[in-house]
Amino acid sequence: MGQLSLAVLLPIIIILVLIFFYLVPVGLWITAIASGVHVSLMQLFAMRFRKVPPGVIVRAMVEAHKAGLAEIKRDDLEAHLLAGGRIELVVHALVSASKAGIELPFKEATAIDLAGRDVFEAVQMSVNPKVINTPPVTAVAKDGIQLICKARVTVRASIRQLVGGAGEDTVLARVGEGIVSSIGSSASHKEVLENPDSISRVVLEKGLDAGTAFEILSIDIADIDIGKNIGAYLQMDQAEADKNIAQAKAEERRAMAVALEQEMIAKAQEAKAKVIEAEAEVPLALAEAFRTGNIGVMDYMKYQNIQADTNMRSSISEGPNDHGSISEDS
Image (cartoon, rainbow, N blue to C red):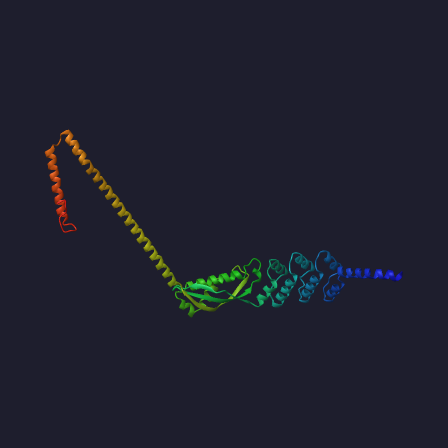
């Protein structure tokens, strides 16, 4: 009976011991005490219920203590962790900044971390500047020659402007804009090829790092290639456009001439129709004159003779017909 009770109690005791050491991390407490960090077992026990990993807090406190960062408190670390921060990176950054002589308060480091930036990388970049390679930037000089330029921008992180400052994309965009402006203001592409440092000088004078999280230390032109003759292409396009405009205007004038010709033909046909209509009224007028007695037979014969004489004169004036003889009306 006693052996049976021991067999039942032993697993229960083991489970209870494991639960106790999980809830009360004695080993972690001993490590903290040995490292000179003062944290009580009750505080470590309470972290479990606040869903704060005690190991993360204790390791951060030990690192800060060994680096001589006495201003870092346990409550501040817990608050930053509960806010979604990365206390390991924050402590690493504070230690690196302290060793490099860079002033970085704990609140500022946590603010940078909560803003989504890698504060540890920013401190490293402050000590060891970073080189950013720009993509190929295409610009055209005043003589119409296209140049393709690549640059290397050396930047250093500005700790004070990491919160709210623009990132690398903005720096690259501004540098590209400065390169385009510098090449575009050059009278000839040969000047740019002879003095590429003029681009760097002009771009640096613009203060492109204003409002960004970086400080531009230098801009070095890595490569310049000659592209297309954009001026010649533009002249060809302009000549083609002028030709199309001239053709359109000529077509417009031709259409207007055709329309005017059609209008003249229509007017001539209208006039001819009026003449025919007037000629058709002559027999009616003659008949009316006969009825009323205004003309007699002799008068009519004289009219016929005059008309025949007129037709003959007209035929003679027109000259010989296709067979070389006088027209039949003569």
